[in-house]
Structure formats: C-alpha cells, structure tokens
Length: 511
Image 1 (tube, rainbow, N blue to C red):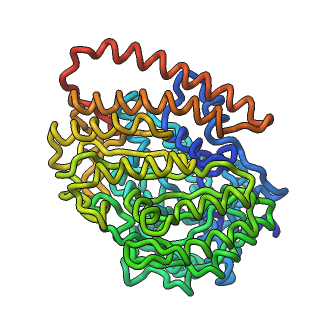
Image 2 (image 1 turned 120 degrees about the vertical axis):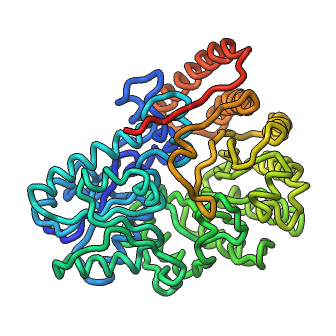
C-alpha cells in the first residue's frame, strides 16, 4: 500500500494501544495522571503499539477494523493509521474517520474520575490533542472529518467543538452500512449530513457485517450484538439482537492469529447468552464457541457477562464449570478476566430501572443473585472488574444503603469493584448537566469507601496471583504497585478528613 489513502481511519493514543495485553489497564486512561508524571501514566495504560513501515498498527481497536473492512470490501482505499503517523496521509486524503468509546470523557468511568479529582481525564486530553492536529491539517488540505462510535452522543453536548474542529459528520450507531454511503458522497464531492442516527432499520444484517482485515486489539472478536434484557440506562438494548455465526467468528480469529495475536477476547454484552433460548444459556452453542477458540488461541477472556446469566448457566447445566475446565485445560492460563455490572443492591431500584437484569429471577432477589454469581466466579477463577451505579434517577438514601450492604457481603470474593455515577444513556438519555453536576451524599461516600477498600486489597492479590507475571512486564508491574500504594495513602488521608461529611456538590466545568 502506498501513502495515498482516500480514507484515513484513526483515534487517539488512549484507544490505539494494546494496553500491555491487558484490557483492564486501558481503563486507567479514563482518569487523569495521579501520583505519576503524564508520560509514566501513559506508559502504564496506553503504550504505543507496534506499527508497520507505513504507520499502520499491527493491532487496532475492533470498531475501527470494522469500518476499515466495510470500506475495503466496497473498493475504497482505506486503512487504520496510528495517530502519530496520520500526517503522512492527510495531504491526499479525502476524509479522516475517527472513532472513540469516550470522546469527551463523559462516559463511565471517566466522568467519575473527573468529578472526584477535579482534573481532566487523560483520554480527553489525548483526544483534544489529536483533533487539534487533524483540524489544523484540514484547514490546509480541505479533507472531510467524520466521527462516530459508541460515544457519538457526546458531540451533542460539545456542539461548539463540531464547529471549532470543522467536523463534517457525526455518526451515531452501527456504521458499517452508513459509512459506505458517506464515503461515496465524499468521493463525489457532495455535501455531508451534519448528524446521522442509525436506527434499527439501518443496522447491518448478519450477512452485511464485514470480516475484519487486520488484527484487533488483544484479539477481540465480536460474538453477539444487542442484549435482550432491556435495562433503561443502557444504549445496547436499543440495538437488535444478533448472534454472529461460528464461521464468521472463526475467520476473524484466523485474521488475528495470522498477525501473531494468539490471545482472544469474546465480545458481547453477555457472552453466556450466545446462542441462548431467550435469556436462558445453552451449553451446546457455548461449548462449540469455546472449542473453536481453543483450536487457535493461547489465552481467552470475556468482555462482558450478566450475573443472572452466570447463575442460571451454572445451576442448570454446570455450564460455567464446563467452560472453565475446557479453557484451563487447553489454553495457557489459569484465570479468566471479565467485566460485569452489579449496578445496584436495591431490589426497588432493580425493579424500577432494570427489571430484566435479574431475569429469570425476580428483581426482589437480585442482591442474592449477585452474591451467588460472585461466589461462582471466585470458585472458578473468573476475575471480574465490576461496576455499580450511584445517583440513579429516583434514588433514595435507603437504595444506596442496600448497595453498601451488598458490597460488604462481596468482600470475600476476588474482584475489582468500581463505583460509577449515572450517565444518561439508552432510554434515559438526557442532558450534560445530569452528570456534570452531581450531589454527593454521605451514603454515596460510604459506598465508594467500601468499594475502594475492597479493590485495593484484591488488586494486590490479583497482581500477585495472576497479573503481569512476565519479566518484560516488570516495569509496569512496579509502577502499578507504586500507584496502588499511593492511592491507599491518599485515600486514607482523605477519608479521615471526611468523618463529618454530609453532602457536597461535584461539578465538571464546561471547557
């Protein structure tokens, strides 16, 4: 490939990184540099990836790979390019396409870091620098700028940046079909729409979802789109449910392996619902999916699963035990990492906000479901990075107390637990001020304290037992240990000074 590209696809360094092969480290980029210089902070969470002689990363974010594949399949000259190398292509480019999970740091957990520390998160800093560079080149060369991804909604809260950086189009939703239409308009020199919302009628069917052409970060491969649970705070429930066929998944694993990526992550909002009957996991499709993985990979992780699905899977057919037994016996690993959402310990809120989250169990039993799920994960060496949400609409002090009580009962289970403030997405999508101005109550502080104490204790144990054990990762391991100790010292000092705390307003300034 020459340096002549019609479409340059990129993102900032917080996204364009393999995070030392550990996806969880990428979440550190959602916070501001704390206790360390910015360069060392970036070294921990988002080191530069390997690139080829043309500045194309060997591994790139999965969403960017899908856009690249869609354009290549349609005959366009397109490639994902590392942000440090985009200037090589901008003189001849017709458009630059930029994707992101959290453009302006309003998503979780960026907004929590920002509210609590009062400092701008690293991902926003890096994205701003990238856009300033690209927009300066646009004024010189006149190419179009198209942005999109899971955080497209954030541009509606930063409309001044659309004008400042001369962004032509914001794409909100699954973009594989829409991006080809936009590319054709760009080539013909036609005007572009300012904002494109991809509704249910415009999402790609299974046979229209392209196979990635280059390796994805840490071998991430999508196995399912959408979620049947219908939680009102989640945007994924607005997308139709589709199970990706095994032959499609196999092709993408083969692409990753061909580029030397032998680890994999199965991506879905609920991996255990792959091939399910409604919300009831089925052993056969899950075992076939994982048997496929162990034929090619050396390690495997799950992006997300729901705690109710995990409990049902283990109760009904010991599915969790069968999957972990297969993985540990065939692959070079002794644990599985996954993200899970606790959300709340209040049965009242569970019924009001997310009645499908506990299904097939009633919302009244949701706290018990969570506790049983954590026990199952602990027994099977599944290490969750768990979140819970504070400041839900209609939340009461009693709701938060119920969450604190649940967190206390989870102390014995190996996990990292992180608090998040409610972000208005999904059917509860709202205004910027909902997260930019949060009233922190005593009960919120208690929940955050319990989660912090839990996570600091377990982070050290998890690192010792499972994490960053290779010798070449020793510097990052030492920096993480230093960071954990620094957080512990600072947290103890802050908490001691808040013994008489009652209430405080936290504000994200308008930049």
